[in-house]
View 1 (cartoon, rainbow, N blue to C red):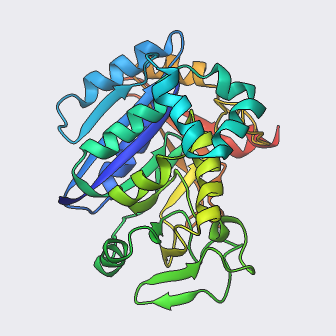
View 2: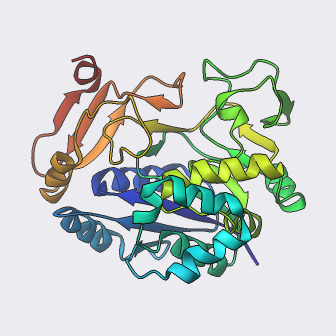
View 3: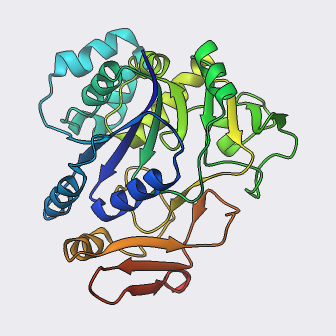
Amino acid sequence: MNTGLLIIIFSYNRAMQLDCLLRSLSRHLKVEKYKVKVIYHLTGEHIEGYNLLRERYKIDERVEFVERGSKTSFFRDKALLFVKRKKNLARYLKHSYLRRANDNFKRLLESELSASGFEYTMFLTDDGYFFQDVHIPYEVLNEISTNPSQVSYRMYVGHNLTDCPKDLELVNSSLKWNYYDPDLTRHWAYPFSIDATIYNSAAILRIIRPVLYHMPATLEAFVVSYCKSRHFLSIGYSPLESNYVFVCLNRVSDLIGSAYPDILNTEFLNLKFLEGYSIDFEFILPPDSNIIYPQRIILSHTSKPAIVINGERLHSD
């Protein structure tokens, strides 16, 4: 087993934002051995943006792109899950979007986890951004290895968040808590996340395998429910100060309700990406929330003037 880190990024119609995340990851992740697998799907003209991105990263052996496909088998991919867990069948009958789902997201994800050979896994989404260096404490990784079905390390929380509980345990250079503490809420009561949280690879594969899901949103929601029913992933660690945020620019799915506005839609960003622009952000550090509206959005080009957009003004309008 390789003691390195497998990073799985979920992406949909956000090639420019994905590029920004990959650059921030390369700049700030202080891990000797890691591999990035981008699991993506797209619609329409976004294929050109992802083709450009794949071409840009083909010389980086650490980054690999894997497109979701439509080859599925009802018996192999769904029916067996109904037998393993009654909750899967109940959800399948209740939610029409699960019955309409026809791609290989679940099988592809679990295949990547199974074949990786890395001891640790972290999931990310393409609206994420690392804003400062990430040093993962050896002591925490050892705890994850020792108690793999219970321990994880979350990087989008810390003392700088206004809603961070004041009485979390301090262990060396990390915060520690129990996700099932009845006095904790929000991020500190949510034992599984598809954003900037490190797990033991074999353990997280065992946890997600019995659960029916069809996309990142249902992966997170339904696995959280499953963890709570089995009391998995009870122990959380985080840095003292968060180093990862969600950048609120646009929505790509209406499956789970969101109050966040479309500041810059994905079609506009894809067009600018194809024109040779890259995106970056300015915001107050350290952030007091895990979700930020950038003060400024900068679209940079090697031979053209930068496009600078006041993110707060767009949000307020």
